[in-house]
Structures are given as structure tokens and as C-alpha cells.
Image (cartoon, rainbow, N blue to C red; front, side):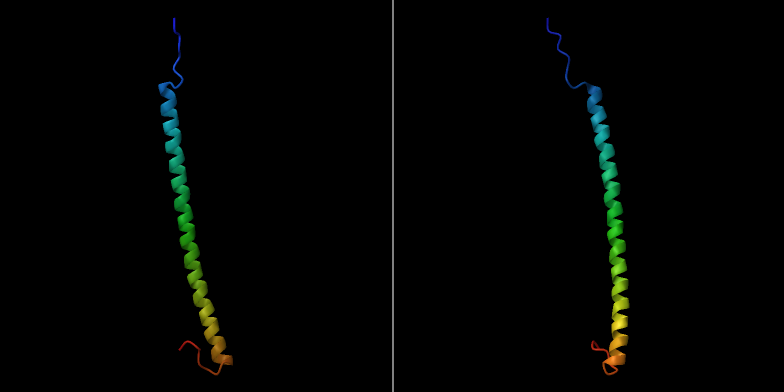
Length: 71
């Protein structure tokens, strides 16, 4: 008589499927948060670039003969 019990019952398949769905949802939200952070960093760099350009123009106007080098 063969009393073989199946290795993967049906409840385990559903359990692993729900676990993978949960993992996919969490990783998607983490990637979206990181994308928002990169956007904020890019915006901050643009504002820092504008401030640096303004300071450079003021310095060249004062110490470089009165005219900014770029125009």
C-alpha cells in the first residue's frame, strides 16, 4: 500500500503567492519613495546651481571689472 503524502499542498501555493504579492507591493512602494527622493535631490541641485551662479556673477562684477564673464 502506498501512503504517499503530497509534498506541496494547495494551501502552501496560496500562501507563497500571497507572500510574493506582499513582497512585490512593498518593493514597489520603496522604489516609488526612492524615485521621489531622487526628484527632490535634482530640484535641490538646480536651486544650488542658481545660487552659485548668482554668487559668481556678483563676484565677477565686483572684482572682475564690472561685467560678468558669461554675458
